[in-house]
Image (cartoon, rainbow, N blue to C red; front, side, top):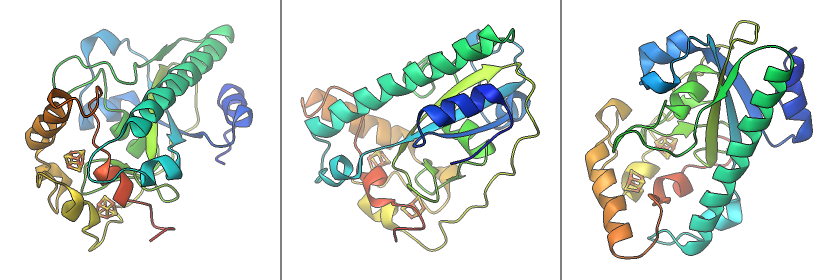
Length: 223
Ligand code: SF4
Ligand code: SF4
């Protein structure tokens, strides 16, 4: 568990020790990533919340996403929306501003309102792996993320983690459409997007999920 001196953030942590929380500067997030104008309200901090996925459910994915994973994805998203809303409410009740960013809403085919994974990376929660996902030391890619923007005065953000994929190629080998390369900056988003679209068109699942690169990346403690 990460402890912070900020009472609202501590309260969220104490409610559930499985939550991982960090924060970064919104300006750094803007520099590194996309921030939709609707959500760019001049709030200087981005608080990142990570919630681990269930190992048994993720391990049940064989070749294609299944309905168990789809329901878990939906449940975790709802949980994250609720956590973000509760944290925002708590911050607002202390007289500060807070805006919970939507977990899954897309503002175009490739972007949400902001990049939750970039906010988490800048908040010291993990690194951006070859799969372009956030990779955490304890849970690998098996986390879902949400972000709350706020003007709550927070202490300086933690240092970002260094890239730790090393010579691992597990996600590269697992991807059915070769979307993953050695360098996340060359991630072939269009190939991944088309594959997820094909799964929906084939009625495999109703969400934009695959799960294979999430499944194979278990974090440095589980390799
Ligand atoms: S599976 Fe290996 S290479 Fe891929 S993101 Fe995880 S640690 Fe990095
Ligand atoms: S979600 Fe599936 S298709 Fe997309 S990069 Fe990961 S393994 Fe490849």
